[in-house]
Amino acid sequence: MRYIIGIGNYRMADDSIGLRIVEHIDQNGLGKGFEAVGIADEGMRLLSYLENETERIVLIDAVDLGLAAGEYRLFSPGDVQTTKVAQGLTTHEGDALKVLELARTLGYPIPPLTILGIQPGDLGPGMGLSPALQERFHTYLEIALEEVERD
Amino acid sequence: MRQNVSINVHHLTRVEGHGNIVVDVKNGKIEKMQWQVPEAPRFFEAMVRGRHYSEVARITSRICGICSIGHTLASVKATEDALGIRITPQTYKLRTIIKHAENADSHILHIYFLVAPDLFGAPSVFPLVPTHTEVVVRALRMKRTCHEWGSLLGGRTTHPNRVIPGGFAEYPTEAELKNLKQRLIDLQPDMDATVQTVLSVADKVPSFERQTEYMALSSDKEYALYDGVIQTVMPDGKKQRWPVADYKSCTNEYVVPQSTAKYTKNKMASYMAGALARFNNNYGLLHPEAKKLAEALKFKPLCFNPYMNSVAQLVEVVHSIKDSIRLLDEVLGSGYKPEDLVKPTKFGRGQGAVEVPRGILFHEYGYDDKGMCTGGNCIIPTNQNHGNIQLDLEALVPKLLAAEKDEKAIELGLEMLVRAYDPCISCSTHYLKVDFKR
Image (cartoon, rainbow over all chains, first blue to last red; front, top):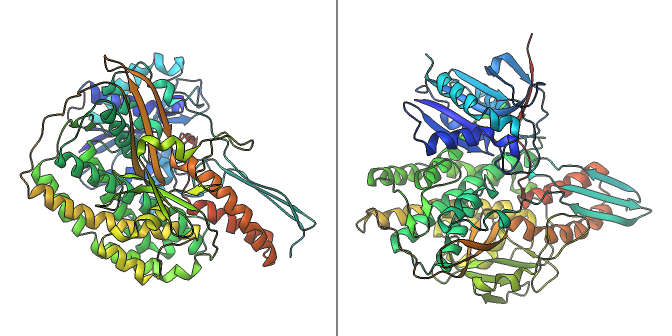
């Protein structure tokens, strides 16, 4: 199975980008040959998709890349190191990289996984995306769809 | 007694969201003791205005990623009340099963990942991975079953889209429900091991009591999670009930200077909601296996120790698993089949309440004659607990000072108290912050 997984907080503007892409895929029936999953606030749910049978995961998340708002990078977890200090795995402290670190330590199979990291412009309270991300929404969508089908 | 203490816990860790603990003791006198909640308001009540009744739960389920099932259920129930919809017995049972799933999922997360580190003397779950590998692996295994249990009925991992006014938009197959039942039965060894783990650290649960009022949904026919009336039990054991429609007169929201979240109170200066409140109100209706666990832990109502909220959560996990197996048997044994949605019979105002992991949750909406929302209200359980947390802290600090605890021990005791309430102040972002390796 292949997955596009969105993670983030729906109520905090650009942090919701992954969830909104997943929702768009869901609402428009674009999930052919893969499953689109929104795990929202709870990064630990990512563990359910780390299986031997999983062929590929594309994880979409807001990422502080030091770029201009709306710019993005595709990378694998091994390309980066987290600079967030996390005490635990609450929905607020446990980012996806921490969850993957835990999974690796515990011997979970780690399938090919690409992160589509999008530089947020606004992480304050709000139920919409900032203009910079809204403008490129379909670009992110196309990249995710292309990436999930990659061999 | 310690004369000078200064504690400033900014964004307490291992709770869902942002809360601060501030204590200032000078010359033996407590000058400041505050539980602060610097949460930004989210204005969901305004977002639903002008929306069709079929859209409202989809919006309000986003209030919280952890309790999105509970918000969906409370929202749908309030809408159904406003629209004169009476759901079928099958819908009632399936919704109760998904409610059990959410509570069990959240409780497992709280017990294993947020509370256990304190009891094992670790700062977080990460140091426990090499030393208690089997415990961590078991916790993740249980958590996975719980989340897939909710996803099966809700249609999604979070923000369920199958639960809609009048029933369900889609149904799991009979085979999927049978498989779910087997997976719940298969949880038993992990549940037994969990009980043993908790028993091994039970003496680490701090002993502190403060009498307060406990509020929960209550019903004569079941341990109320999906449905019931409002009930409180007072320190002398006296119980009083109110219809859900009267929720405002029981919650009496008010504002305090140190918090952006509203506080609530009923008969006493504050009340507690959550697993311990449900346990204290509805103990007699727990599944026999859940009661057996409570007895093994010498845990019985009325319990005035807020730290025992986490233990009440464990008892509830047993109840939720066992009661869901019973409900699945009933659903599968009585001609399970997809049902048509029950249609509205009126448009007006309605209220709905469910028990989410952290306590009683209220939603209310009004609809015009076209089914468009004219206004909404929502009172979440974490806000209902803020007043009780504040008064607990005020009672606990003098005890810790008198016991000559050092500042670090006092800080840990206060943090553990707040964590026991499992507060969920979901305002944070989850973005990654990374450096590319060269």
